[in-house]
Length: 357
Ligand SMILES: Nc1ncnc2c1ncn2[C@@H]1O[C@H](COP(=O)(O)OP(=O)(O)OP(=O)(O)O)[C@@H](O)[C@H]1O
Ligand SMILES: [Mg+2]
Image (cartoon, rainbow, N blue to C red):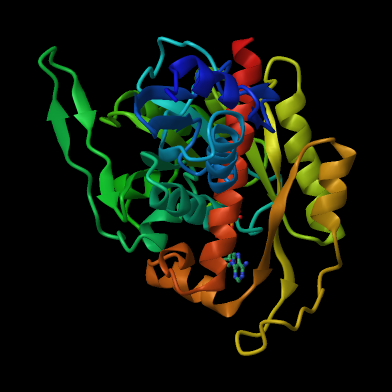
């Protein structure tokens, strides 16, 4: 019996992407189909290398071919990804998705989440950049052990000078901290700070990026307005801690993205410092700041709850040492950040698919 390409594609029409609610053939995710006797091979092209459903979809394809075509078929599936963009924009055209990490409140772990998310996405094979837009308290130099680093520059054939992001742990990084003396306060007024931030996007040699993560300063100030008004943003990830005071500020921070004229998709809420866990007793959870605050916030704004990260001493220590915890493959926390990264990438892919319609 000969297997035809139509048979295989018809079988794969039975496999639906649960997020995009369409079958994989309609979504154009099946590529390079080759058939030789009983050997069927094709590429499954996902919308992100961090897809949490990678294995499930691969198995579903395998089962569909065996069930609907021939159970003797030898199926080889090569899983790749092509990260989608929110819209076709000519501005920053090589940067597919700009993702803001934000909160109305200071000290809730925005920089910790932004750095570890960036590392987790890069570990999946995505091309990742990270901008530290916190002009008055930049964290990236410390978190990536780059306190005295100075980015170079290069000139384009057209005579434009481009800042070269610094590469570390597979991520391209720029921080306003690289351009200031770490021991001196930055006496910039709002407009100067805004211009400096814009330069990090416009005048840097980012190359192609799947995700450009932006670590925002606390609050809802000039920098937020500048970035949300100047660049096409795929979405914002909101970080909160469970205390009532933090939640109240985070609500304001989240509401900002919903304001007319800003209107940026909220990808979801991450609850950081959700509970305390002693390193040596990882099953003991102490809800010292209250429980489920982030979940309730997500529910009341009808946005996804992306997950929670406990308070663990090694997160602080790893950040202070310049080796964020997600780099430590043996830590349970790096698995947590990988899951969060998968959820963020998944929400972006869903939004992009919706905006393409
Ligand atoms: N889950 C956690 N467990 C333990 N320590 C944490 C955790 N998250 C963050 N921290 C620590 O808390 C401090 C504040 O975190 P971070 O700098 O990421 O917050 P932030 O929201 O970016 O602050 P800012 O508003 O100043 O920018 C850091 O010392 C960091 O290492
Ligand atoms: Mg910060």
